[in-house]
Image 1: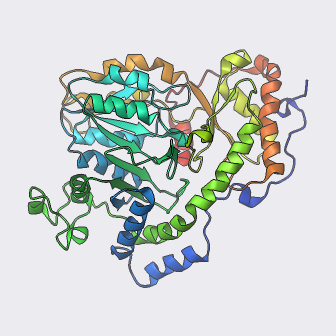
Image 2: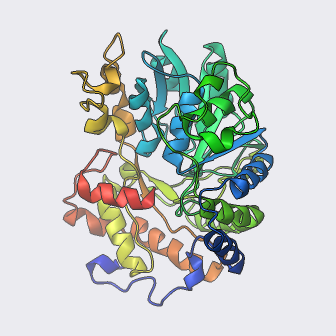
Image 3: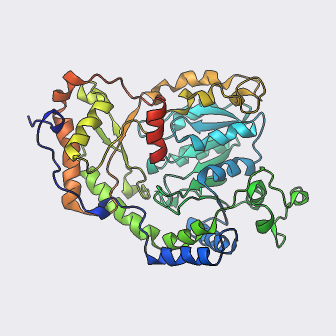
Length: 449
């Protein structure tokens, strides 16, 4: 038995790791020059650079249209609006995700029904049909932490019930599912490109689709005047509202971010290929270790994890005699000696937050989630206990393939898992399980997401 560092033993990692092992995004003089061009020529509020970025992004994504927004939350709200979702409609969303995936729905009068995740933190297709009612109009799919959802099964269910599909690709830009790029399955797809994402452009969101009608409604939602010029809007029912955003928001992106995006797009596939090489090497070292389940796909199937955004592992406490994930990551952090800090839990399950239970956004005298529904969809949350009980933890998100260092970080996790019995006597932490814990964990999640 090797004494754990948390209990006074020698840490696995004792030296400072190279700065570029985790540094992200990678910015060079190309970005500097592009940004300064925007600054010195006062191009912040124009659209010429943004339109170029949209065109190149659409081509890279493999879709006809792309529309850039101020952030990912705005792009997701526009996606819902683009499909005509509104009061009285129900939308199914995965229970465990960042709040921006679902929160805008309540301002459109949409009632959210949450679907369970499976053991790989992904929407469980086997739970989808439980969630469907005559009011259901759309499914919001999230490729959580870059892990591709089972799109074959999800799309088959959507087709069977004549439902729209929105893909939230905020964690998986450029990822593949059976050889097909994520973001090309949904009727509309949207994603964040903010500064912590694998595709990082400062602060931006982008919506993609092949349907002209959806694209135009997304423009009308928050891209008024400038992006409506040259008769870009063809839909007769939208033309009368030219000059005023139908969503009541100014959503087009600042062109500093568009300029950064054009440069990042040139190198994204090359850089994320190295990330995948590094992350798969790390997980190879931990295959078969009790309690540790690598959150990754089998790339021989034509799928991949894109840029492995916010890399996580699934935790199986039952394999370590019930050791809490919080105690586990405390011990791992001690072994890594400040070179990386792991957190437990990922995002809380949204159904556990008061926003989705009691918040009355429109002052209608009842929670917004059920304000326009003929039933109390919150009752369906009783089926989500298993999602709340699935634990995960953050692992190092390597940006460079440095085997000698990756070996050390993997050894830190292995050491703790193989010597877990030392931790059981001092484990006073309640199980994480995905519950909402309040301000401290909220701050951690905001930084991560």
